[in-house]
Length: 359
Image (cartoon, rainbow, N blue to C red; front, side):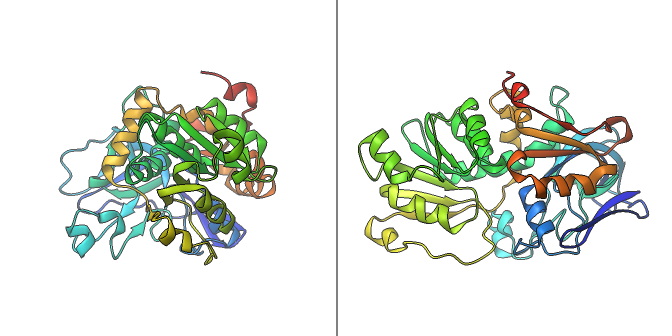
């Protein structure tokens, strides 16, 4: 089979390896579609603190069950599925406490285990999520990033009266936007440095957007709300020092900031505000299977039009070109999709603004 292999930073190849076989309790998926995550790009550039080459990327994916292993009775060959890519030990204290997503021995498909930018991938059957016929394989590949947003919003405990700040309008920021809108939050401000991404955020439901390279958030708060500490909660979805430093001072007393972005380095931030204003600083790691099911329901109900985020499509044969294009033109990339199966392969397609305007 064909498999993507990131050998070292900026050196990715498509290699031929033997087809994998599922073991007991596992299934083999014939991958149809796999999304390129921001984490994949950070690993490609050598900037990710946990995903260090060599590795075989691909953790946002959907496909069909191709083969079932011994003991698998509740799934059948041909079923359309997506996968929760986290692999947990099921025996450490967090796992036994029901918080298996922070397992002491956590591994992730596409990082510490072979990923799905390949013809086939083997996964535990307990990690499968059935994909209804009304959802495409591309939508199925979006279940993973949308589950990240669902989990973060659940931890933040927002509601209709919450003023929410989302720092960053990349894929995870927009997934967090979808999850917040589904919770009834309407007063949502999204920030970024790229105008096109802010335009998309407004089209998808953000009440306000702020280009942080042009407008200080404190100035925005005074102009829009007449107060310096305007937000009840903030979701950091970038992983940079500047977003933390910008977001904390404009949180109300008793507010919350949840860290969703992955930070490659330690940061300096006004931590004294946490004590002085009794601000809660929370972390959000990945998701649980229930977050995937919620994400699936949001897509099926039309509350998460994730397909509007697709900025490019490539066949697996052009995986090298896909990574190179994202690196060279990051401002044009929101979500790049890799189509794996031959029947899905098609010429490279970039979606323009008119496509993003469609309902």
